[in-house]
Image (cartoon, rainbow, N blue to C red; front, side):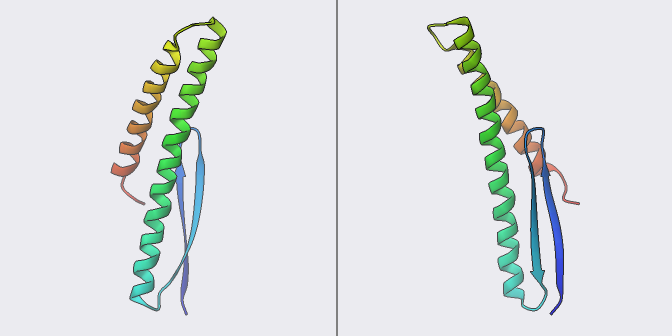
Length: 100
């Protein structure tokens, strides 16, 4: 049985995930299953990266609103929307980047 170890790293400003995947080269069905597992890990990592980015921006906005004692959460809303834009930019950049 031949085994190859592939390291796939997702790097960002906030998070760094390293997924280790062992692919057995014996059965094409196993290769199909491992490809699906690799895609699942990649897209799950992207989803958690989006969640973290939006959460960090919204938290910072909430802290600013608390510090200013605002009755309306203006900074929470604005920075939350900015977090959505930044996270979408990161997703597009990571999906269009060629795999090395």
